[in-house]
Image (cartoon, rainbow, N blue to C red):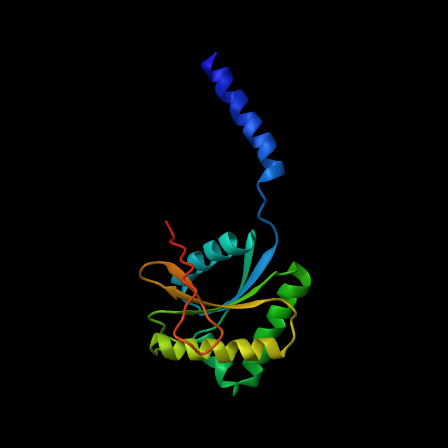
Length: 164
């Protein structure tokens, strides 16, 4: 009898939860470094904040420095082509530009990388993708993400997602 009651409760919860708990669906697009230590934290962050199921990744070593310099137009065009594909074909809800600690492709301090992220955001927004663009910092040692202010301040939005 206990088993039947337990099964009934589980069925009841699962049935009604579909009407009240929003499902994760859709895509986000992340522009980030090739360092695999960041991927899981970025996926969890996007799933939690934007309620998406999938994250398209466009990776390149030190991508925030590449975008911010603006000098490698071929690389920027390639990146933006992939972001546009993500937006058009997967209907991505947001573009997240990611910087991270201990980056081999952009071996600078966090403050410098944040400047690169802000400049990279301007480059991405110049292409008029028409979805929100967010800046994200990943601490690869603690597997936490923090939203970075788009303005040149010392503030961070402090949305931390800890990967279990």
